[in-house]
Image 1: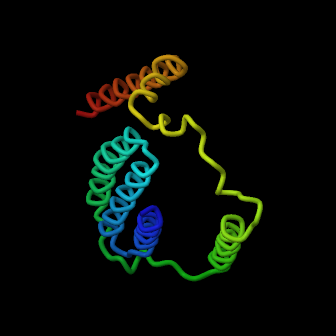
Image 2 (image 1 turned 90 degrees about the vertical axis):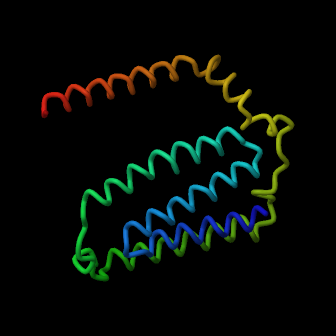
Length: 164
């Protein structure tokens, strides 16, 4: 199941990059977010899977689609780029990186990627463990982040009122 979902995630990511239409690219990004949520479920991290779907697929992608529609990109031929030396170097570097990853995870005999899981690994992604971590060990960063977001919202409202 993991290999099927992982290959679907890779395929949707590649299709997202290769699309010329930005709306279709956003749809493939949504498919990729769902694949990542399924991978979280396979790792028994239910809270992370739900947050992936709600936050990224729900909120962020709606924002991205609205921005794409507001930009009104028009003619797609203006968006095409020439094939230059930077792209050749980047393709060579990415290919080298992928070959290295296949070697490390596939052919090395030292067991990288095949280590046994911890006895507490089943409890890492549950709602109870995430809530306990947020409200005990990470309470101060959680509250600072919430105050920072509140200040950003208040600033956006003040700026929006001045313009209207």
